[in-house]
Length: 123
Image (cartoon, rainbow, N blue to C red):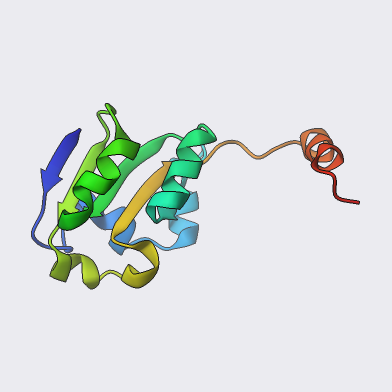
C-alpha cells in the first residue's frame, strides 16, 4: 500500500474529497469520464468487485488495518488522517472513516441497459 499520512484536510492531495462537488468530480478528466466518491468499506468493496478503478483512498488512522484487506497490493495512494481531522469531513458517521475516489466507467448504451433490465427479473 502507498500510505501517505496527512495532518490537515486543507491540502491539495485530498481536494477531490474536500473541495469538489459532484459536477466537478464528474468532469475531473474531461473529456474522459470523471470520478465519484465511494463512502464506507462495503461500498468500496462492491465498486472494486465491479471493476471500478480507485484513484485514491482517504482513511481515518484507526481504520487502516480494516481497509488494508480491501486495498490489497494496489499502489493507489492511501491518504491517512487522524480521527479529529477526518471527522471534519462531511458525513463521517455515514462513511465510517473510509472514502475512495473511483474512476467512472463510460455510460451504458441503450441496448446494454435493455439487456440488463431484461435479465434483472423486474417487470
